[in-house]
Length: 277
Image (cartoon, rainbow, N blue to C red; front, side, top):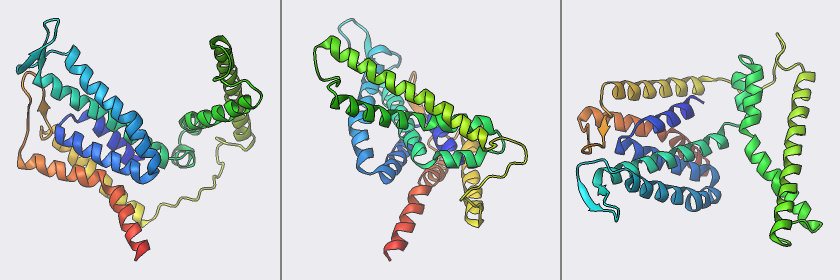
């Protein structure tokens, strides 16, 4: 949880090109490691168009910057700095989406409840249900659509009005299922005494020595990167001229940042090599 909070937070805050590149590469590699072909298809069909659209839109509407490359038909300039900032903003957007996809694949609802079930039981249950709502809602909608297709009520059948009516019907059935499922889950957890004082909880997770060392490593890396950013080691400006900090201290921050984000890749690669050996 701490790893993903720091990784996503750093991806939101740091606009230095090196940090953006490192975060994008590590996030994409981790996403491919977790989901394989599904992640590759998601990247090509969704992330790549989003990246290109965001990179093109910014220089079209933002005309700040000192290096003018050309002019639009309306007379507004296209500047090198606006193009660079558009690429950086697109990179940040795609990177954050990739890290959130990794988060949903790793931090399952049972892990979230294990972390926060005793501290904030009601809120942890609500957040756990919210985080898994979208994938379950999507899967249920597909099941309802297949069932409706079997009785001739598919969204691809009939005239446009009939198709819209069928689509509304499928959506209504799915929303009704979601509401009933939420009520049943709340009643089930209440009947089991969830959130009552002194209630024990079963968990398959155990905080051992490896977790302790990993936590120390994450906190040290995160503290070093945050301290370096606070001291100006990751400062980078895009307007009016693109310029940033390129000192030996900055490169040490880049190295720690790379090791921090690549930690799950290194751990999984080590385990895979050990398994094959």
